Amino acid sequence: MLNAINNAQKTLFGRLLLIFIVTATSIFVALSFSLKMATKDGESRRSKFATLFGNHANYIVDDIGIPPNIQRAKTVANRSHIQIMIKGPSLLWKSSQEITNPANIKKRRSRHRHKNHQNLMFSMGRFQSQHFFIIKKQDYTFYLTGLRPFIREDGYLWAWAALFFCGFILYLNYRAINWLIKPLKQIKQGAQRIEKGELSYRIKCNRNDEIGQITNAVNSMATELEKMLEAKRQLLLAISHELRTPLTRAKVGIEFIDNEKIKQSLNEDLAELDHLINELLEAERLNEKHNALHISAININALIKTIKDETPDPKRLIRTHLPTSVITLNGDILRLTLLIKNLIGNGLKYGNEKPIDISCIEHNSILSITFEDQGDGIDEDHLAHITEPFYRADNARQRQTGGYGLGLYLCKLIAEAHDGHLNITSTLKKGTHITVTLPLRPLH
Image (cartoon, rainbow, N blue to C red; front, side, top):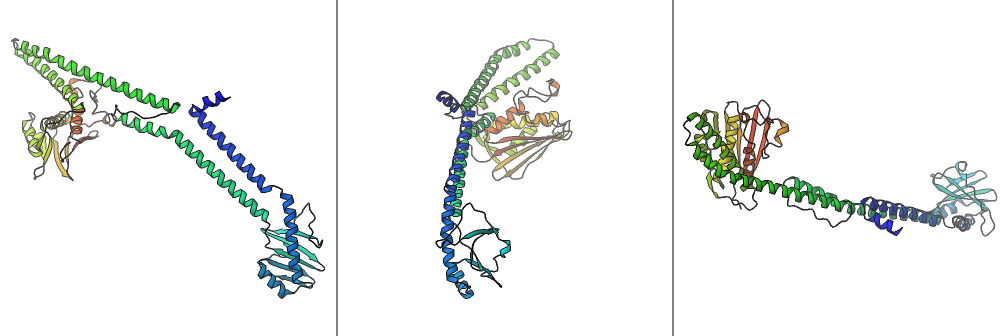
């Protein structure tokens, strides 16, 4: 039995079941005890209290007298804070108009015969929430209300105590369950951080139950993902570096080819391969945690104009909307140049030979550079993944429809390396809107 209980305490289901059993048992015991105390010796107490108040009621009747002295009855009612009604031959007097008529009072049945110290019989009656002591003396009947038996107050006290105790038990139950599932919130937060790319983050948990096992599984998954991504990076870096040597030899060999057409075609292919290798190496450099940017003050207006003038495509397709005031940005000029060139190149490639607009806005020390084309746009299903490495909206991956899927990924890394971010919105058949947001404050 003890082993079964110990095993149950190690599981989440067992702990919840144990909490519910303890809660139900505690409430049952509390209610049973309160009811027992409220009704303990109930009939005996009622008999004793009824006799006690019967004697008190008899003193009041003797004080009023027979025949009743109405003035005296008024004084007794005011002094004792009770209500009195007297019925007799040609008499029906009430100390308060709130008292109902005698015909409405129902006499309560009792297993005891109530007598006072003079052996005078009396009974009890009730109308709604009012309780009456009914004493008949000679030709007059006296109805007294306002004398509340202590047994009712005692019962109410135990009832309130039981409710309070049950509420306290439920509060402890809530705290226990909240403590039990609190690690689930930490697991959720940790999973969200890992999802955002913080693969080095680990969830802290000292539990040995199912929640602890889930936590260890999530941490183990993050470790394996980190190892896989690191292995991928190392493989890409190794391949990129190793390709440099045969690429150089191929460039030298091409120079010995006499056919200019073949020579030009091979040079274009090698240039494309060289560009891909450079993008891979640059992306991995920006992924390094401790990579240092070469920061300098950059005139962003002049940089955009220079890149526009150096673009080999027709300049009429590039429209700039730059502020008249000079905007100075602290950043790495080579990488920001690469970012702007890539975004202009994308706009020209997918803009259906329509103009692209470049604009700059500075607000609260935040610079926003916007690139807007008038192409076919990007489907919403692809927008969330378009900045992932090697992701392309064209599943056929044809060279005529795009590059290798590294351009926007590299732009995103450059923006984030400058404490900024890249935002892409697009509407089909209308075009794509890309905004690069960069802080103008000095970078740490």
